[in-house]
Length: 321
Image (cartoon, rainbow, N blue to C red):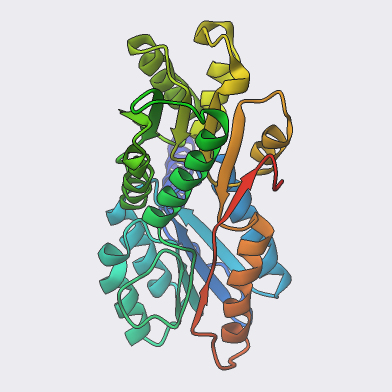
């Protein structure tokens, strides 16, 4: 009986240790292999998932280990992840910030302990080692509005003031998405446009975005354009618009526009029967990973770091794809 009791206690202790270790930073890396900690806002959509996989492959190909963690849109979680990388003795920390201002102190702490920090996609307002950014999110939103304006001029040349109805499907989940949304709302500056804003609770969920589009069309079924704050929301909008439920009778004079480039979005834009007309690209996933490696590789080799790489945005439409 005592042996059985001892065995049960031993098993319970092992299981408890296993559960606890799941919540701790990994520390099983080889000491002679460079270790990179990478925190992302989320991997909740296809774009972010594909980007993270490409970056992982590129870093490992360069001979380093990498631990990638998603903060799920929570700034406190992202700060904790950066602090964990510091505790783990990371050789390099890459931060794709939810908010650059919010993580600045944690990044500064890493730098003070001699750990290089790379800010990726979003500025961090402190003296990080390197910065790789695209154009800011508000300007991406404005570029999307410019793309829509060009399409409207071609599709509705005779429209009177306020005659073209545009639905802006935005979100307030993260500071970057808020900025994109505000940029997209500049479509209202076009006198031909009557703009309606509709919020989705999760711009990275196809189901949530489709539900938002459905609700918007229930309120007003006469939209001519839907502007989507992410590629995921654009895919959701296109799925609804292509269904009988949408009630759209003239799809050749209807357009969906978005921000983010994925292979699926590009294929749909190239399909002339599809209502997804264009997107704003920050560069392909491969290009984004390549730009990041241009700053990671020298740091891992102990060479002089590249201080900054600024990306550009490119409209992808039926004409340019």
